[in-house]
Length: 532
Ligand SMILES: *[C@@H]1O[C@H](CO)[C@@H](O)[C@H](O)[C@H]1NC(C)=O
Ligand SMILES: *[C@@H]1O[C@H](CO)[C@@H](O)[C@H](O)[C@H]1NC(C)=O
Image 1 (cartoon, rainbow, N blue to C red):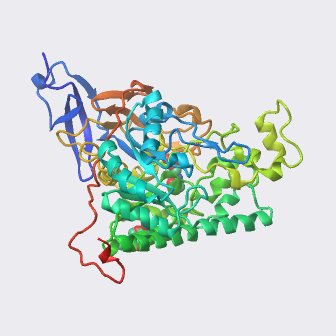
Image 2 (image 1 turned 90 degrees about the vertical axis):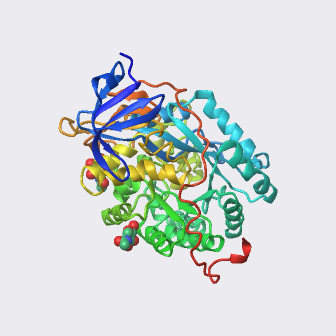
Image 3 (image 1 turned 180 degrees about the vertical axis):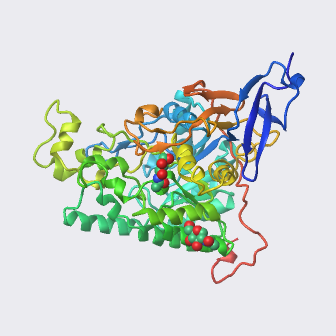
């Protein structure tokens, strides 16, 4: 008999950002249609049935921080990092890890030809369309210049024509960082257009100064990357950016906060009622400085597999603090910061050897020499190692095993951080991040906990195009069993069942959180009230 549904999920424990209840879901035309304690046999009819067998059923993951198809071949030898994943490989990896929406970065460069943000977005969109995506996707725009004419004309067009309602700014990296006054220029333009400003907050001068001092002492192995960025570097930058944002009164999301002292700055700003939000990532809850010395010896180049910025925190007490921040609302979202570089590739982590002048001084790689042999002979330098690690597929499972299964966070908190809040913050709610009638039928269904056999991860289990995972050997107590995108099963029982063009581009609206409380009295000692 014809069902009024296309797909039905039974025997699930539905989790939303507020509730955990046993419930069935009826899906019609790619949308959530009905939530009910049970369906009658007429209602079920010929609909496809998925039996969740008592497992958690959650809105599909929304990963708001994913780098795909960005190349940064900037080194003296034209090497530099090349993003290992394109939209196809990155999105299939995401799907296999329970994520149904991702937001990636269209990136302006300082090149004159990159003045136009619209052109940047068009070119980036062409990369997405070239391969297609298994999951739905939207773009943030990275802005590295403050051209007044461009900001004035093009930001409104990006919002209107592309639904791009967030920009990302850098306080470090020579080729991307903005000065304080340039940050203020872009923040003000964003404020006028209801654009959320994302900030990579690390003090670029401190990093440069420390890097030179480390190099003077010959401390250049991958591990020392962490020492070039102690937590105070992030503490200073968040503090400064919060002051700048206060002047403008614009919403700011701090990306990838990795230190407890930076989280405290965020918390204090929130306590004062400012629209300040923060993101943290799996690497800050699961890795420490120890992981940067994991392979063979502290000076081994293979440790570059864990180099990302900011680095993982020094020890587990920092992780306890960050977990507290997840629990008490300091952190708004939990994203992967998937930034994939291959290890054994001249355009990946090994750039750290190939671009390093002292490594290259005496002799170039011998003809035909395997890169791995070269690494044995050459030390390389952390300064030249592309910063970033893969993690789009492991994001949800890591938080499940490390946070939910251990009781450090609740199931509702899990959904809030990994799906609902990113959808709200970036203008996708309640289409995404919710299980309300009319929401897209994006689901992640876990395995029933009782019958799942925990396992140790090896990289070949993953679906990215990267030749390693920083989480190799870690034990996982659950994994997404089904991933469903707008009613279509795209991952089931360990197999990809979706296709590269299943994903659609998402035009986003303004942040659901708004610009903050509008009737809050503004202190003119802290805010340039006359600006608005
Ligand atoms: C890291 O994740 C693994 C796998 O989920 C888990 O077993 C381990 O306890 C986590 N470690 C920390 C420090 O969170
Ligand atoms: C919440 O967590 C943060 C750490 O991220 C901490 O600094 C702050 O003191 C905590 N706030 C409360 C009220 O517990």
